[in-house]
Image 1 (tube, rainbow, N blue to C red):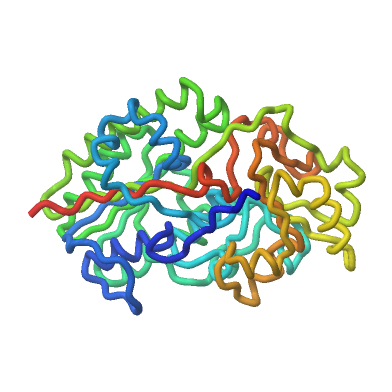
Image 2 (cartoon, helix red, strand yellow):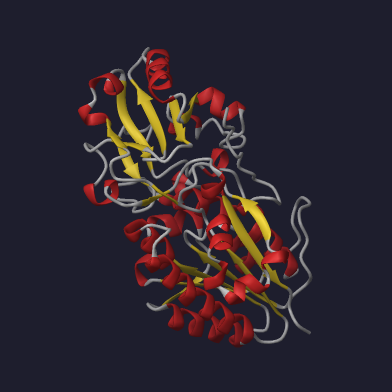
Length: 376
């Protein structure tokens, strides 16, 4: 039987990256963790959608990253393997069971309404939904000049306020301009931390597929700019590159729509999550029947768990009581190249995307961590 690749929320996971980098800048952590060589400055780059397996398979398109692949640390991101949840763990250093960003689409227990944690449309106040301090805040409060370089619409967005608040914001469109803005921020202050985000690789994989020529072309572009960034850093500056999840291609005929399937829909009040990692919020008293129905239908193609089983297996890490009702009564994570959608709550443009992620397969959960220590 296929076993899930379990998430990690320690030094072997995405949650351990920013605490270690901030620690290397002289901010003492309350508890132990991985140590990096001391640095005066640091840049952390997050390439959305750069799974480790994808990088290994396409290393010929990434000469800079290929050159350091042997020293690259594999990390397991959290569950679900989706941007909003990963950004929560990356920004706070905590598991989703504590920071509370538990999926792509989540039901708010206060209102009963489904909202999208990525776009944050009609969502709750971000600082209330995710009250834990971020590591960008900690760095800034410790006197480190802290900057986030990303597209303009990230400035003040719900997800930024929830997971990545605390940094000065610099907007730039192209990756080249973001690299330039990053270098300018690093050179402006001797003790500085810059976080750079790039999402085009993920978008390309969604639209064209992560096995497409377009994806490889975008990887070449990313690799060239990362080479330029790493080669232009001021002395005393470390370089760290990570990702938030990997990706798999799902054939468009490998999708089932709950809205058109009365058996799957029975007992389900709201379908949350996403195609590869569904969270089923059930009608009162219907959770056991829903579990049986979905297990019978997809038990050979997915891991189907009750909320309690998923928590016991460590999918969400330790879970705070305020976060518990945000998790679906039944959680379904696919390991075969199929997915389930609900066209009543999922946008058609999202349903039609070729590249998908969210589940606990090696391709989706493992990402690289490339770290180059500061030069003296």
